[in-house]
Image (cartoon, rainbow, N blue to C red; front, side, top):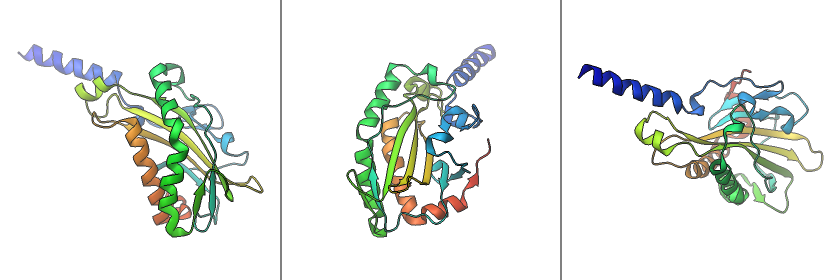
Length: 225
């Protein structure tokens, strides 16, 4: 009986090791000029040095001093095809790529609607056709995770995730005013990456409306390479 118990524990430990979620892995630097194990490429946002902080609901955030959404108009550009960056990029299979493509198909529509509603009280407007601030984004990693690991192992094992970049630039000057990089994780058997992604969009929109981008950046903890 004792031997049987140790065998069961050993199998569970092995499964947990195999399916340990990326979200719980320690963030580390990748190649020069990158963060988040190579998934965040700083040069995509700007050529100027950026000091990122970890804020509420946003893993990596940078905001230019004095910038806020109040009274601004935002033009959301279509996202390009997903790319796969970081140490696990080669592990992504067709299911992962299909999920990324699905998320990519309506993300701009979601952002315009959800953030438009959240920021309306600040006098901000969102659109796909015009705006003083151009908002661009991209998916830089996506994984469906493992439903079996979520069910049998639990504790966050088998988590699916999607990693996104967002940058805000002034239309006239092209100057960067805000940058975001975040990993949305689905770590439970009753949640999906898609549902978590939509929930994150709503949460971030509300957080920005309530706190202000500048305050979120000011309160954040500086990210170390």
